[in-house]
Amino acid sequence: MHAWMDGRLLPDASAPAVGVSDHGFTVGDGVFEAVKVVEGQPFALGRHLERLERSAAGLGLPALDSDAVRRGVDAVLGVEHLPLGRLRITYTGGPAPLGSGRGDAQPTLVVVADGMGPAEPATRVATVPWPRNERGALAGLKTTSYAENVVALAEAKRRGASEAVFANLAGNLCEGTGSNVFYVVEGELRTPTLASGCLAGVTRGLVLEWFGGREVDEPIGVIEHASEVFLVSTTRDVQAVSHWDDRELPAPGPVTTDAARVWREREPELLGA
View 1 (cartoon, rainbow, N blue to C red):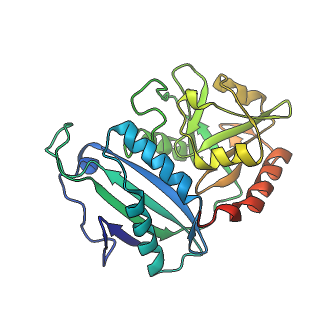
View 2 (cartoon, one colour; view 1 turned 90 degrees about the vertical axis):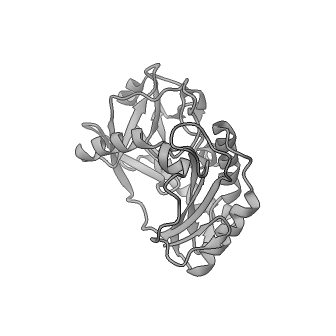
């Protein structure tokens, strides 16, 4: 693992670097992106930076210096060639007084690179009882306030699943803790709209662009009628769902197989972009 922080490459990624009063550490006042790395090149970095800028603006953080982020990416990827890995780009409110109010210090910007293994071809998901708030101040933003996801994912793992899926306050299907959900009903590929409160996933957007699908908000019970389901995310790509709670599903089904094939064919287009 290698890390870059505020303009300098850190000699030891595990050494203390962020101050104890950093607002991202004390209250989760920060945003982040996870970016896939393939053969030393970041995947769809431009799209991730655009979303990071939107998240920072939505949280009221100072404007992000995208050029600085790219310098950090180049620095950490230049230290070690990663055949498969991921970047974690974190941007916080910086040092601040204890409490919710921000200080007047400069934001903190950190880029970390580390290797990862390929995702399993299929996985299990579990529905959790806590709803996403599609009307909340953080809806649709990729912030570091992830405690809700931590609790949900722990519950899913307790039930033998690798991902937890939320409904929203309206009772409609929303998203996973770190993934978007696609499902097939009567031969049609569907996924929740962004109005559901789900994150505008980069992988989600590319699957819609490259493969198609209809954005629609439906009660989470629609999954009972789905003939197949898959998850998409930076670390999962297109991953079939074999079990949703106690229901077994084809993994992969024919639509999932085609979507995964199109993903593999088109992924090289955005390496380094």
